[in-house]
Length: 291
Ligand SMILES: Cc1cc2nc3c(=O)[nH]c(=O)nc-3n(C[C@H](O)[C@H](O)[C@H](O)COP(=O)(O)O)c2cc1C
Image (cartoon, rainbow, N blue to C red; front, side, top):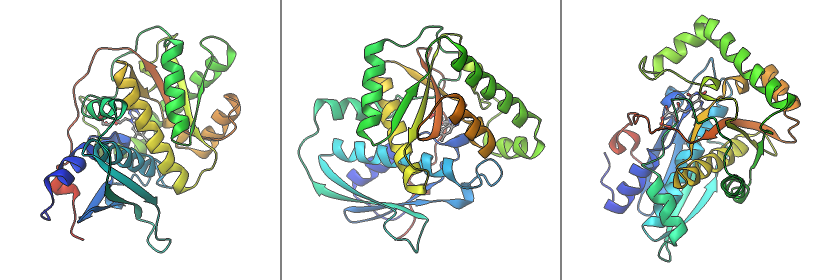
């Protein structure tokens, strides 16, 4: 591990708490002085389930949001440039840490939520979220330049979207290559859950971005993590159902069924549930590579 400042080590430790597709943690970091590069680790990609590396970018976007939040906790003013070098697409972002003001109460709340956030792996309550919490989550995503579409609690649209999600998950369960790829990353004790965690009245939210490029995927990941941290502040947990987004045909079908304007990046069930176990993480030393 390169020798780094204790503050940078704390910031990187918070970043590693980010959610990632199948807990692949497909990120690397290079820290030099007050600058951190975030790089994609393609050896942790999913060539079958995620051939375009869209979910890899979304995961790294979540890592980047945690970096930003943790940098603010250390009173830095983090300035981020996404994809700064067209000739080096694995270089996803550079964060330069400038001296900044002390964090606000809202920023501290999100920083405290970083190690508390967990994906829900048990069924969510059979209750839609309170409207004021939903408004707050929608606003937080908007602030990160993405949008959330919440499906009406009852009605044909929700039923047809959930039917599509279930069908795709069943399809993947029958696909031997997909199963082998999932098996490489998931613990049998913590299988990939999807729409099974959604109860009839669980809130279903689809995070979308206006475009569908690697930059949009990084934006989606940051918006996703900010939504998840804000949800954690309200003791709301999220369960992912992303299988339908892994095939261009079902992704397009979802877009049509849900009447989306932009591109769907993540499908979430949102609700209260008991706190599940935490998942293992790579250490900061493993994530850091030399400059
Ligand atoms: C882009 C993305 C897609 C995900 N898709 C799924 C999914 O389909 N099913 C699931 O159970 N979890 C999914 N997850 C959640 C991860 O499995 C989870 O973040 C990881 O196992 C680490 O656990 P934690 O979130 O509790 O820290 C996804 C996460 C991300 C960032």
